[in-house]
Length: 323
Image (tube, rainbow, N blue to C red; front, side, top):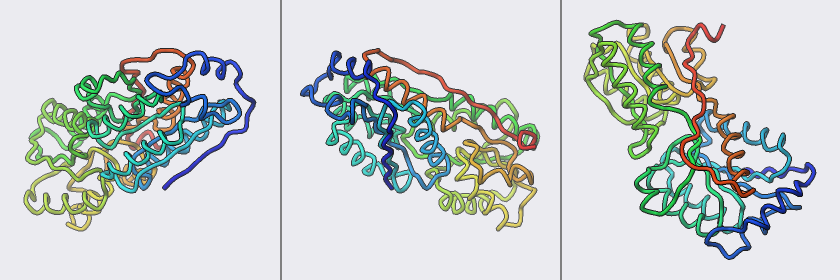
């Protein structure tokens, strides 16, 4: 699924001049400035699955932010499913071929995307990492220093898990639904849930990946309930998996007996927050995160150097927040 957004606001002459002055690291000199339409730099936004409401929200937020700025052309793309790493590699390669000035990426894997991003950097493209942090060791090995614009996933999961611990009580047995192995945010959220379980006196009896996907979460949760019929809580690393978990709980006729803590705050989860099946989720403000990533890319294109972790907001959301 691909989308290109061409913006028609007045040309940013100062930025265009900065582009010409600063050049492009390691490239032929044609990348970036040559990618500008009417003097406006083109920025690629490469996301994960656009079948996920979270990334649909991110895409819409990026479009709106680009329109508001009016000084860039945005090319947004997403992959078919959360594990389609090859799809993201193809998207990065297209950005290189198109000679864009900047690339903002929410990587499907924290290590596998480093090599194609290194090719983009060599072509002179300014890089920004959002949502899922790229692996620091892999970046160092590739000689890359890419700023990360994103949330504290560990803290968010810990705070969401604390709500579940309070809801079901000390000594309760719980399971964790993990994200994709190799993705930093999956590992961080699992760590946060484990910390919350320890602090709240919960007994984590199983932890298994469902790869961020609803259907996989339904199957995994069904199997976990069968193997551990006495569980009373599920710590789910994203809302899409929570939707599958809630469906599996209902199919097992355990609605009300098993509560879910979640992460992402997509609209589709709100009915389950309201009816009590899900006790918490975490808003990491996908739209603003994309806009912040675009802003950092534009600063780099204009000649500024951005490094390190630029932390974005999180907020635990419960039934009371929905009114």
